[in-house]
Amino acid sequence: MIQITHRFEMRDGIAQVVIYCYTPVEYEFATDFNEIKNNAITTVNGIRDYVQNHFSHIQNQTAMIIVNGVVLGSTAISNILTSLGNKKSE
Image 1: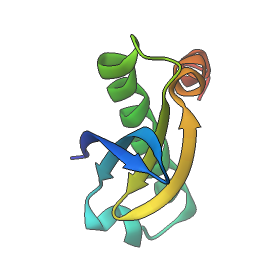
Image 2: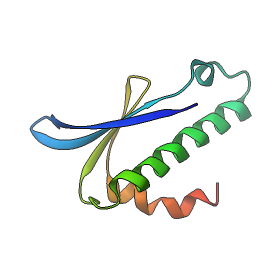
Image 3: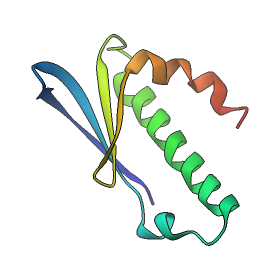
């Protein structure tokens, strides 16, 4: 099960939402490409759903995404919410 939490933090002098996502260890040790792809899609969809449920009211904010302790990057929350339309096509 994927666990997602967040905190509001100051990073490099900029207020950011930091989204922490913890995935099961077996997600990292998949045996074939299709399983890796499915686990990645599940994780991304979980982050999208979390953002939609918690941050739809602050779309102009920047969010840093950290998965299992690894910083994936920063993006505007509005970008994540905009990509929700693409979720159905995956």
